[in-house]
Amino acid sequence: MDAQETRWQEFEDLGEIEVRKRLAARLWSEEKEALARQWIEFREARDSSTSADSLALAREANDLARSANDLARSANISASEANAIARRAASSASLSADAARTNNIIATLALIAAVIAIALSIIGLFLKRRRSEVMEVFWGPIDNRRCRFFDCTRYPIHCAKKR
Image 1 (cartoon, rainbow, N blue to C red):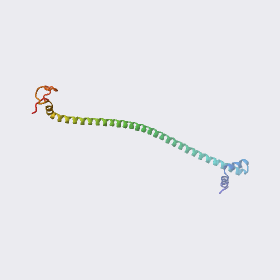
Image 2 (cartoon, one colour):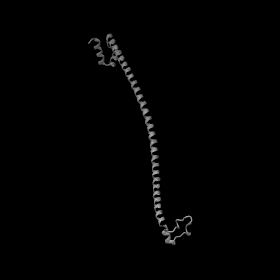
Image 3 (cartoon, rainbow, N blue to C red):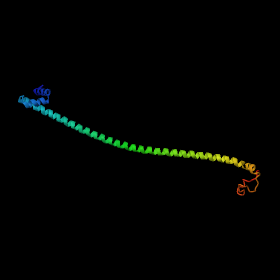
Image 4 (cartoon, rainbow, N blue to C red):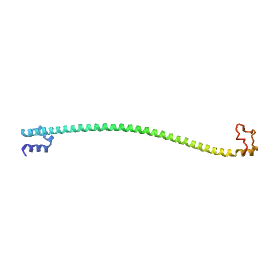
């Protein structure tokens, strides 16, 4: 090692603050003071370049964070829109379910009415066949004269003779 490297190693061991103190107190020879100043300037230049690199990295990190924030904001907006669509779909599904329940009730009532109509038709067929027999039991033999209850000219089947 040459003399300059030996001195710089000595300055590194002392640290920047201690070197500055000793420079201010003028404890060293002119040659050693010149090397100490040169060492301090070198450290400041190195620190400033490191600071510049750090500043560039910090700016880049800030830009990346800003981009990530913008993406998060866009994702939040998209999620809000999806949430609104889901709410509308749920509301529509609820209305459809209510309409389906109402339609089921109407269909059930229509089925009941159809069953009643079929039962009445069957009863009517049975009674139609037996009507003349039943009327003869209550009112005697039926002929083509007028009945007490029906206009036999309009309803000839009612008073028709049993054949």
